[in-house]
Length: 464
Image 1 (cartoon, helix red, strand yellow):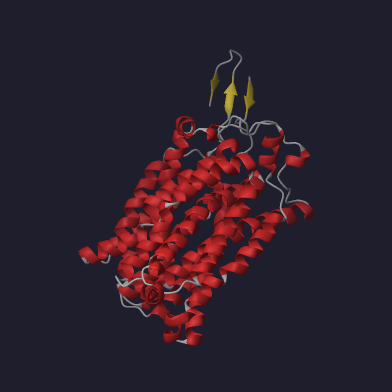
Image 2 (cartoon, rainbow, N blue to C red):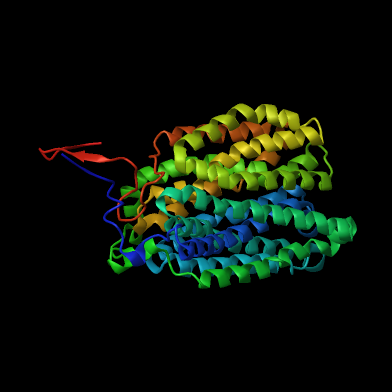
């Protein structure tokens, strides 16, 4: 009787295609560079989201006469084109390489964010102002459609199999860093220049900071080779004839990971955009917290989440991804209503409520850069990830702030965000049942990775 590991592992990779070793100084240096190159784009993306979320009152005053809901709807519009970005950038990333596509996406993302800071307002050019803002948000969405999936794939394919959770968690560290940086910058700037100046011109400055962030990202990515996993497939000429030439073939051949990942993304991003993006608006407009107070609360919570992420990612390498997701999803379902009720009691209650929900959310957030790329084989990984992630995010994640605001306005129930979060986490729990465990599994090769071992007996039949 003999045993064989999953087909995705294949044989040992040639030295030039092996993941960098954490045992050597050069290997550690390469991994650190890969982390920086991946995380800077994520930080830039979420810096923009953070700035837009906390500056929504300034955006409303300068571009929309119909109220905050229009500014939030414009935030959601960018997500409608994210699936298109995934359809374009994903296949290109699987054909041309991760590095080339990531260089283009960060240029578009940082460039469009910077131009928002230069737009004339509605009093100057009338309806052209919101029109141009919407266009730039769509450019951001299109570029982001390829950015996150590519960055997560890049990081996962550079990481050693046994430490993919730990190293991948730094991509999400970049997410929270970008968001916290955007929030902190707006807060400090408003304290320096005052509310009137912020409303007139100060809101523009945070958007302009995206330019140097983007340039740093392009520089870091230009210094990296493409991932060892991709270069191995390219050298073996296994990229030709990929299912990504035909979207129908992708759906037919990989429908299970597409559906299961979609369910997890619904839970992830409804929680994400409800808890992070919508929270400043919720605290200010629904429970009458001051703008500065809400920003301070969000920043404290996000810094605490950043501190926890690497430890949570390391734990997932030991206990597995599925247990981490289960704890997070069940915890959020149980805690959502009491924590939102606690938020209505004042600053201290809001800080505790946000902190508890944030910690529960971090448990799943820290694992996604290791979980999602491992749900697809190399030749379709970028496209499968990008398309699935962005379709689910467009439908349920980016719309969450506007949906929450509209439902609260129509029902008067301040617990709507908790109910919405609970429903999304229930969808995630159903999907989790069908997700294979991939902690420690190799993500090389042309088969879907798994930790399951196939045992082949003497008669030729096999069992798992």
